[in-house]
Image (cartoon, rainbow over all chains, first blue to last red; front, side, top):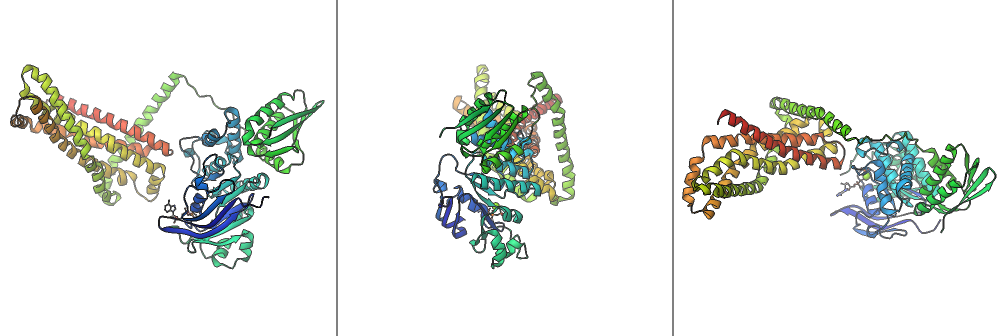
Length: 253
Length: 373
Ligand SMILES: Nc1ncnc2c1ncn2[C@@H]1O[C@H](COP(=O)(O)OP(=O)(O)OP(=O)(O)O)[C@@H](O)[C@H]1O
Ligand SMILES: [Mg+2]
């Protein structure tokens, strides 16, 4: 494994307008690992992700993706696949067309081969039979899975998943976790994942950061299993043991 | 890095040896190599794929190899993966495992007669939807009277502002121009008989009775109809309407009623202002093009303005307004799907609203003609 981290975030400050969500945020994501971003609802996990993929400019600090540089400056073949929290499928296109779109834009693949690749990705997330459905005609969990399939279609070596297993039944959620593990272990893909599902965190994540709205930044980082067993910080402890320091008690806003 | 799929044959057994990068950026070459290798497998009973010499593989390469193995097995051959490459082996296995066997796709009928039939078959359903909606609106009025709090009265002033006041410049301009047109038309036709003095009457009769309400309604249908329909459609697709329902609101009472009311109040006012501007338009045209004095024109106009001329026009306006409101809101609420459906519904709503305005206007004219008014 090369020693250079896949993502380097250095003294980052992000926010909207004059409102600061997070500051002095520093962390690294090693290549080929699964990295979890944890924290209460509304603490800025999705916002951090939007900055990491370059949709938003940070107020201060540095984000560097290995081989890409500053993500907001990057142009060309997308160096990463993204699953948005809402799925963000194109509502006027069928699932197959949703997957076909990036393939058609960025690769010379056409006809039967493209169809085969698209179909295989949909099969992978268990949606093989729904290729011709419109996003409006499938369930919320299915939209999530279709979003995962679309994120995989360009075979990028970096994936960002915003709450992939939210809204999935336990079996589909475990299947998705297994898929993520396979992608990371066998293909060496780096996966950055926002999730609230504790079982999934302990199963898949090699490393994590825990964000807190009040602290405006990272309150803990490391191996989630270690944090669960050893962390002294009440918020972190409560988060991992689902105890009374209720993280959902202060809803976002 | 070149991509190849070598075939080593020993009698009925073959070993396929992929070399190079089996990934998305080489997928075209991989597809070619796979189909070439497949063609050379005639007469083989068993096939092994040896993954040891593979430089790189990703999901795309794994899919292409997995489907090759699937096809070989479907042909009744033994196919397996060997070689010390656990990552690639697992990946190919994953794609083989999670494969959906699809039923053969249904061929869509493109026979034009079938399509016409299908469209016609939808008509009763659509008419039914429309009547159902009108029925729900009709029921909503007494219910709203009983429980006034089920109507969003607070939005009424801002709706009247949006639908009425903000539309004033454009409806006024349209009416002014139509007034000028009628004036010019009158001068050129009546002038041939030396009857220019009848131009004021022509402007009053044509505009007050027919064109005024129609022009105003068409402009409102295009402007506010589109606005209302897209707003309602967006609320529908983003589940806001469902959320309202779940909280015990009737969307017809809460949303549709105030909008229709705002239209029914403001469109007659817009029509009335439009009538005045049409008179100005006719006056300008006549005074500029003929030797009639403004004073003479006004006198002619005042003589022509009778209660009958004014009322036959103004009485239509609220009905046209209601039609616009019901169509725009009804179409909006029928939306299903995502963002694209919003656009399609808005288009349908505007087209239907404009068309029905014209038809309703014509029906009124027919009615008044039969009544001899
Ligand atoms: N486009 C925006 N403009 C202004 N503020 C925003 C915007 N997007 C998010 N915010 C604010 O940033 C904060 C964090 O939002 P974010 O979506 O990142 O939360 P989150 O941690 O992903 O929460 P959840 O777990 O509920 O998805 C929220 O308080 C929100 O109000
Ligand atoms: Mg979020």
